[in-house]
Amino acid sequence: MSMRTMTRRARTAEPDPYSYGSRHYDLVKEFTIALVAVLALTFALAAVFSSPDEKPMTIASWAKADPGDFTATALAELDGSSATAGYGPPYNAAADGQKIGPLALAKALGVTHPIDTAQDFVLGPLGSAPQVPDVETALKQYQGASSDQQTKWTGAYSDALTKAGGDPTKVAASPDFGPTPVLLAQLLKQAQTGSLDGALLSEGGFYQTDYTLPLLFLADGSDLAAQADNEHLSGDQWGMMNETGNFPGQAWLWLYTFWYQISPYNHSDNADALVWGTMMVLTLAFVLVPFIPGVRSIPRLVPVYRLIWREHYRDQREQERLRTAGPPDIPATDGE
Amino acid sequence: MSEETQEGATGGWTGAMRRSAVKAFPPDKLLPDTQPKYVASWIYVFGVLTLAAFLVVLGTGGVLALKGPAWWHTSGFGHYVNSLHLWSVELFMAFMVIHLWGKFFMAAWRGRRVLTWITGAVAFVGSVGTAFTGYLVQQNFDSQWISTQAKDGLNAVGIGAFFNVTDFGQMLMWHIVLLPLVVGILVVLHILMVRHRGVVPPIALPGQELVAGEEAAR
Image (cartoon, rainbow over all chains, first blue to last red; front, side, top):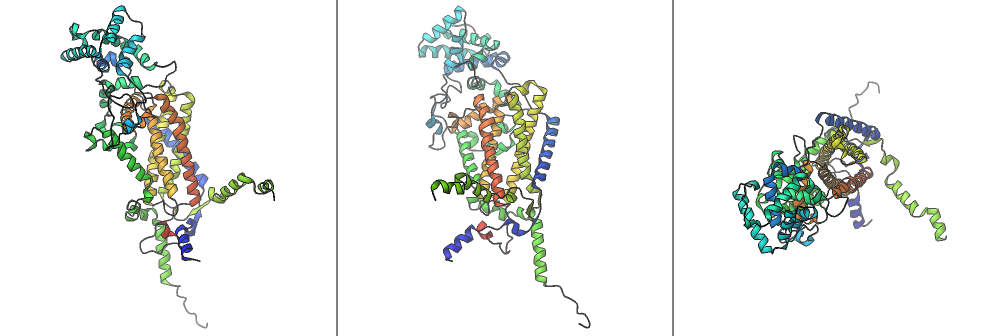
């Protein structure tokens, strides 16, 4: 046998687990007991602790509870200053999106869910509903105006709204606002009656499952985040790994959430991309642990294995003791 | 011998697959009634507990699927089934994490068991994704908040271009079809690999004589 063959055999050889000795074991019985135990524990935990189900926020509930925030958000969607309007890919080309160093993955994938916030959140829902003549006129006036004129109207109304403490009812009428107040007041009415919830969802067909528009509209406002903060769900409260109430959430996301709490992630403009990049590298490292020098040696250095296999090592020590002690002395018998 | 006759004698592709399956998984290896003596620690229980919890997760999720995603919001029994689903997931993840740490400290990838580790690790990552999509399709405030927050991370690295967490329909399909299928296949492969290679033997103590092949397993 050549040395090469011997080496290859030595490399591929593996100890037979049963060469260490064996004992009786009932696989099916053990699994059945485990299944019954898990079922019992699950039934008990569900009976005692139940599960959370906090009602979702609707556009209607938001507009009724906080008409000022709704109006300010609608104005931001109309004048293009909302978070969604300036988001970038995959919603629009207003920004390049986040980067990991020079790597602009969001930009590379492009705009796949195009959203024009003025049209999709404000002008579209107003135009698709039957309106009184004043609103129809206002809509035509706004849509027929130049971009500069629209910006002047929304800018003047935005300033006035800020001076009025965000309360649209306290804003005195002015020709500087153009048709903006009429449009936003009508959108607020549609929102409060619940028709805007439907209008944002029903774009594109009868059956709908895509909640992107209403969710982004809600997220552009302040109330969704405020409620989340009350429920300790904000990013600086370890966010997504929590659940509403005192229920356990996705505790296994602790490492992902952890990065958002520390520098440089917690103040970077590319925080999300950096956290995802970090987690991708760590996930790959986790999957490939057996190939990473140093990491794969940790189990030998941290002797948890001695605890796990303590009976095996005790048996080995006993066998070694018996072996080194030699055969037991047999006392001599007279006459033999 | 003609090709057809030869195939008839060997059973063709089907016969070859049967022979290789029986060789890799003889009945006493697939359903053993003995196990190596060193398998004597509570840590070993967490593998089977993980599998049991996985089946409870699939079962409770199956009941929720039978009645549709909105059922549990309007029915007391439905809410209880949702609670069963939630707590079985919590148990499943807890058991799996303990199982994983146990296997890490056993260096359980030794002795040509690297793929067993990899399938287990990928199954864990897949389970995290499955649970995440489950939280997205709860149809309550938590789903709203998680989806509007998670979109930023996914969009930042381009995943949001084809995996839209604010699209309830898409997430429901991922949660109840695609991801459970992937995790289920990985779990089956993982278990078959454990049955094929056997439970990893103990690490040799310093200065101890290595069992044949143990050096290769280092």
